Image (cartoon, rainbow, N blue to C red):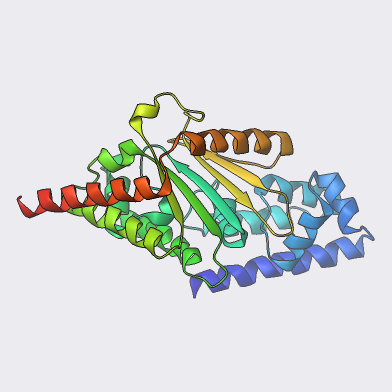
Length: 277
């Protein structure tokens, strides 16, 4: 219900944007050019399909002379989100993507995490947070996974570094359940998972997570994230460079069959270890 209310508010944002733009006699293309996005993006903002970043909302206020209305509305909606401000646009783009390619170098990709594994990740990053904070983070992360079950689910590729399989996040039982969950998704053909072996050594992308997203009616984007921040990229040259890095990762990874066998073997080892402790 909370998510539905937020979507309704973003639609209101879009309706107001359209009304203010038309009142000024400015086309979507003209507004887009003046706030440094495409006219198609302005149309998606107005339909509530995409949500503008804060700096775009600020520029819209400047162009339409709306006294900070769109910035204030954007800030209110961002602050109401359980996600970090830099990640909020990514969540929305995930739900619109027709294809997602992700590289997980240190921990399991968020879309694939079980609740117990997600809790271990949250506490490992900050052992002083409250249970309420951890619960909110885990719930928000698990909510994103619905896109893998929808009828219109995207084509999803994930490359997992072997270190992710070998790091006992949360203990053997938690790891066994996490890897069994990943294997089940692969067997259900909800995604294609590849393992990048440690033997591959240095690889094409070594600065954090990488997520590539493609869309039916919009240019592709890339998202990179380190421990403390993330960056959404849409410059065509930069996205092309990120896509090349992902292609090199894919070339160095194990085959789908060998990857699944390794994931299931690691899960079995963790399950056996959990049963003896």
